[in-house]
Image (cartoon, rainbow, N blue to C red):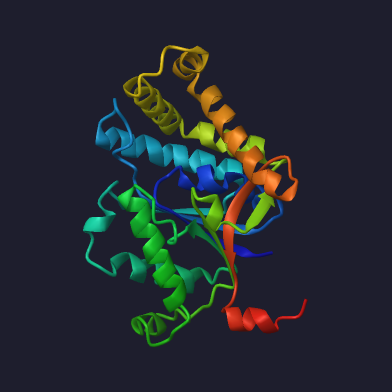
Length: 262
């Protein structure tokens, strides 16, 4: 059994990018710790921030249970505030969590994805990259040692992004895609918000009223499922899987990798 530590900028990000993989690992009995960094209190056109944060926390708990997450942690920073934090705050927190849980596997957004538009995603990706590098060094945050937290090297890293050119490992989620969508459906506020956002963009772009826009308005989850299934088909096709999720997979330094057997 492995310990898997997941860093998600917002309450729904892990499900969107790695939900099928997490569901698979959950079914296999691995211990999954999901760290949700912000409360996501800006992701709505209709709800007030305080109400949205409360709802999203409830939704996140439901989704985590569906995926088989062992423990979910809420750091409760406000949405779109992470780039305003004092430099190094997130890095220290993430190093602490790595040393606390000693994960075998880490999942997070890829810092190499330079086109990421959301400041929270960029901030978490950078802090995770720094934390992974620093967590095994005993002289970095020596106060952790005084607290009984030992340095730790994470052997397997799964980094996700929107850029297929950055990925080199595909996980078969054919049998867990439905779980992924069930977990995403638990994030009701975000399913409605994200589909609404796409509809608004289509209108601005001058797209005429069509069947897909009607479906999106009437049944946002159906529209999202269609999109996510298409995306999973594309990723899965890289390895002849029906459905897949793709990651940049990192283990050891290239010199170490070069001398590993097989």
